[in-house]
Image (tube, rainbow, N blue to C red; front, side, top):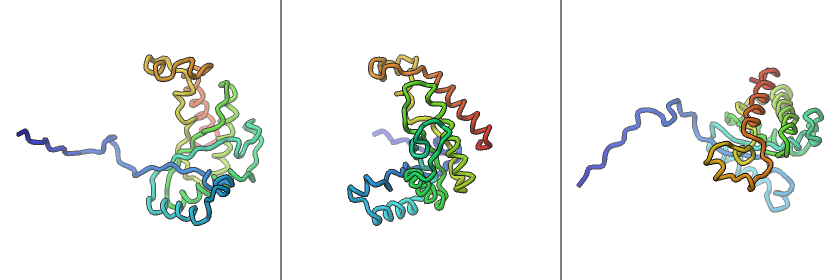
Length: 194
């Protein structure tokens, strides 16, 4: 009979201090479509209770730019729009329990790379407004799209096997995604957000 070796963890798996649990939250839960399907104030109170009980260190939240920039031009904003109010409501809850947030630019997915830059400008304006007007400073990260590997063409054999060119035609090359992220970071620095 072979003895089972003892496993001893001497450090955190990532090699750096563990920061807590993460969750995904969104502001769709507050919208009229969910209300029409039966979501009511008791459901929203339950979600709030659960989040307060969990006290997550991090939440990932999707953001659709047309919630506050319907023209998608990165310059004209509707800060009175319902989804913007839902976003702020969810962020205030997360802020009250000490949760840091990763805002993910989720929609839209423009067909051409040059159409992404106004969306990035809109996200920068959103972050400025959250900081300066809403006095919310819990956003610690931004992500340019969920699952970009399905939106941008990779040059690796594995990516070509998983995402064949004919499955997602006309995808821009992955270096464009890198350039857009660097542009995003430059704008964050330029506006004192990073």
